[in-house]
Length: 156
Ligand SMILES: [Zn+2]
Image (cartoon, rainbow, N blue to C red; front, side, top):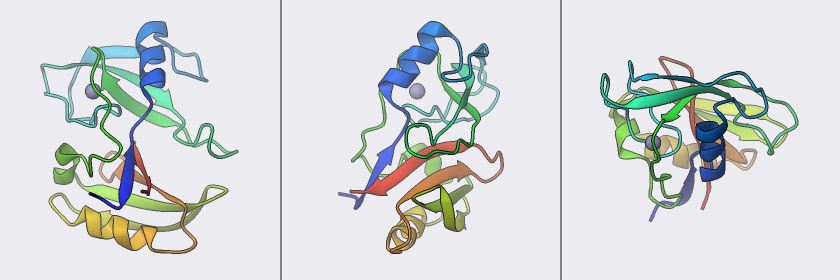
């Protein structure tokens, strides 16, 4: 079992976006479309099938409820119901082929370090090194090319 937990957005947040069709905390309309990129879906953490899957685009503050200062950005989820990635399920397989940036934060949203992992690289190694630092409380994983937030990592 991995020594860390993978935290995608909550089921409740995804349900809110799917039913209200507005961005939580921001209120502007959610955009629905056929996937033109791989994503991933921020709930199940699987890639979209380009040209096949329907997805919802909305604004997410991944620090909401955790830190005082927001840092919102665009994210996607499947339009249809999907299963949240299990927290103890290890790093999501589909994301391993993406170019990823692992950003390490200390409380107060203080950025302590970051590592970039090329697609197919050792993302577990990067997570292990960053979580081993005493000044780091949690990690965010972002897509290096798009810059968008993918998921949060905490110690198990
Ligand atoms: Zn999904």
